[in-house]
Amino acid sequence: MGQYLNPGNAGFERAVRSQIYVDKTEMLDYLNSVLDTEQGYVCVSRPRRFGKSIAARMVASYYSKGCDSEKIFSKYKIAQKKDFKKHLNQYQVIQLDIAELKVTMSGKEDLVSCIQKCVLGELREAYPFISKETYSLPLALADINEKTGERFIFVIDEWDAVFREDLSDKKTQDQYINLLRGLFKGEKSQRFMSLAYLTGILPIKRYNSESALNNFREFTMTGPKRLDRYVGFTEEEVKELCEKYHMNFEEAKHWYDGYGFRRLKHVYCPNSVTNAMLDGEYNSYWTGTVAYESLKYYITVNQDGLKSAVVRLLAGERCKINTETFENDLSKISSRDDVLTLLIHLGYLGYDAVKEEVYIPNEEVRRAFTGAVAGTDWTPVINSLKASDRLLQAVWERDADAVALGIENAHMEFSSILKYNDENSLRCVLRLALYNAVNEYTVIDEMPGGKGYADVVFLPRPFSDKPALVIELKYNQSAEGAVAQIKNRKYTEKLEAYRKNMLLVGINYDKDSEDKRHTCLIEEYRG
Image 1 (cartoon, helix red, strand yellow):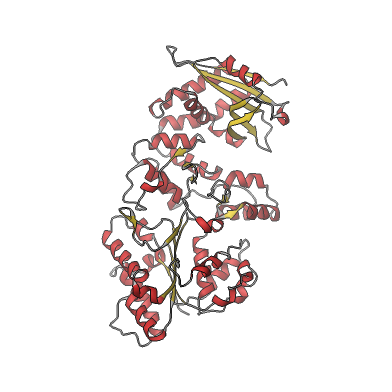
Image 2: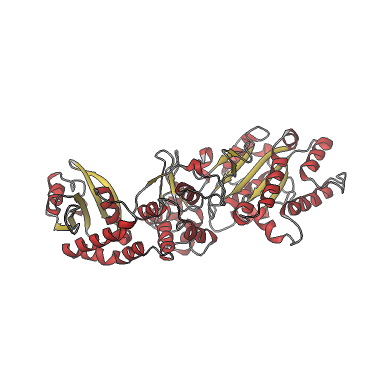
């Protein structure tokens, strides 16, 4: 065993011996199916805290000739697959952590030279016929293959560290990409490579419209395809953990659910769920990281329409996005959609691939966004969020005048950010003005009931004693008419469980009045 050539299984064994390990070994069955094929070049990109490094250690531990891993894997799902033993510990594995190599390399050498020197040193010990004059890793591997028939598996963790951390170092980036091309593209590569497994945060960098390594199959946060079950924890897995650790599942869902893909609609952040189970309480684990600092920076990038989009996302709305414009290059953030796409890959936005929309996925990330905005000069947004608790208290106290004034002030503050002249924009303002309501409520837009859809419904969360709120918004009409519509169209029909504790709220924005006046009417439900 070496540090890079067949490094052993100690890293993965440490992971499975942890207090919580959720079995994701079935991913190996997919990798077995693409070994020694054109599809055997795999790049998996996920946010931090989504188990990338554990997965990389799992791949290396399973395939590496440098260890005996049958005892480790025998208790997990992969052991039930027909090809389990066929590929177990049968390959020469080269495992690299690019972020770690960047830290340990000396100041006198470049990254590519460091990679090749480290790996070639261990290869020469295993294959003494490799000339000391050989400085090219691809050529050395081709030579080994020609003389011995040996084929290799490459596992590269944090493969994109060069592009995330050295934005202005084009020379190193080009040298690094050229090394990867030498390893993974071309006729010689196909002879000595059985599988390449790359994992990082960013998908592979594009040059114009084409990937720098266009023979790789990519599994990303915008398109995880067949590997969607291995991105994070599934709902079933979280339910099992909540039962084992006596934690409320609905709270886990509120805090950590919200990522979803075409085929898998509920995906949870593994690190956050694990910490919550072990701590015995729900909290946010996203602040104080490099990714969090990135969030604070990128949401204030001066791109056309970005501020409006972030405000709408904070209000719980979704925004249309074109993810194809982003070149997976942090030095080329040139549009609103580029920023939003990057935030998907960083885990700060969920992505609906069917509707092509982004959204803030859960309470944990919502709090991260709130904290990030608080560190900006977005005074109107910050003021509105601070006033949220006061406005919510006014609703509960049925102080209609205070509610109308609070909504009116928020509406005016956002006039420089949002173009508002209809009920949709008024709903956005309402959600921002009542931003902190999510601590007590589940908020539902366009909730079906009776003979139509209620504009916004606030349903108390299980632990809350607050009244349910059915809110109807009007534009150039009247607050009285809004409440009458709630009653006449029986929007409360599906809310019988709250009939003894429910408020009907009508809000109207009179655009044509001289002072753009807002009015409000609040009534107790008497069904």
